[in-house]
Amino acid sequence: MKLQQLLSRVRKAVDDYHMIEDGDKIAIGISGGKDSLTLLEALHSLRFFYPKKFEICAITVDLGFHNVNLDKIVELCEKRKIEYRIVPTEIAKIIFEDRKETNPCSLCAKMRKGALNTIAKELGCNKIAYAHHKDDIVETMMMSLIFEGRFHTFAPVTYLDRMDLTVIRPLAYLNEADVIGFVNKNNVPVVKSACPTDGYTKRQYVKDLLKQLNQENPGVKNRMFTAIQSGNLQGWQPFTDAPSDTQSETYLVE
Image (tube, rainbow, N blue to C red; front, side, top):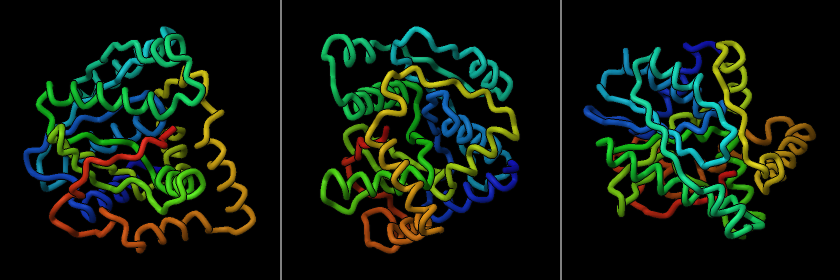
């Protein structure tokens, strides 16, 4: 995928859900994976022609695995003149050594988001951009159906009232395949996840299930996304002036 194609879909999502306003300072959560780095490149480029002026900064919550090299991301941010903050934590130790969590993803996500929100506020940000794409949205809906018995997924815009921060998801209209294509074409410096549960989670189970369903019924993932858009879920009505006024966030994100 070319940068112009990426920006076209990102801008449509931003416009449809009024994600960006004049004067925003947006923190981009950078895991080092393909999705977050694609989002970084997209918002960096969008700044130069989007009619509403905004700032961005990048934040990585270092989980403490000690075998993650972020040098290439530091170089990328320096090249793009993007403020970049790495936040050291002991989340990995707490989850895998102290608590020995058998299902660590939910707690890890909560702790990671808490650290990200705190630093974003310190840096003067009023918004945080997450790199969830269309596949993530559909997978989360399926996880909610299978494991929670409800039709639910995260919204394109979510207001966190306790932190006075707004979460936006500008990649909402991109398929994961689009992100992979962009990363490969543009030599984006992806950092491999060090998490020992990577590839062995409920999300991976649902991802594999959806892949099979889509092979047997071509287009099923796109139809599921359409069902989400038209299903009267909170926050999924485009062209509204106000963000979804809810603190609730789903943590089935791994």
